[in-house]
Image (cartoon, rainbow, N blue to C red; front, side):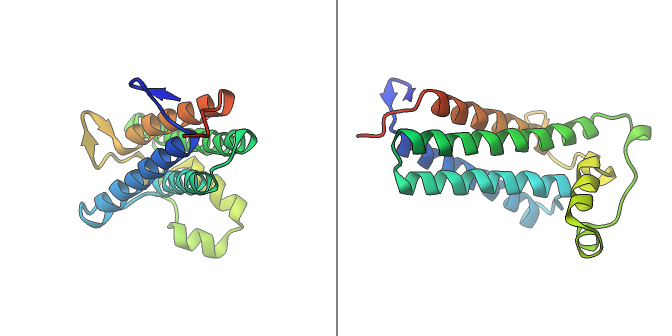
Length: 171
């Protein structure tokens, strides 16, 4: 992959993706622990997908795979990015609903995990609640899930480009 006139190896791209994912998770934890923003269930799922992307990228960088490995790791990163974008898109949609159409509050995540089957918990989480529709923070006019959607799109693009046209694995 060429970036600003430089040729990057697959290992370098995966390393950058790992650092980017770790940085995004760090921002999320900073906003929670220092900024006092409590993540909703959809936010937690988005964090999970950033974690999957970062872990996949770390394994890929350490493995230093050749052509087939680069394609497989890149496909996984694209898949996790697309999945995260779907969840972030759902939350963005909830945030833009008129107040009278926002779903009601549901039980807490820990309660649902203790009492309901996992499939039902996931369906309830993806349905969303009023917690997921709140906008507690903005930067440059975008809310946290809007920024997450942008980042998932970038990560998807990088994964898809690397999957379809693998970068150099030497150098």
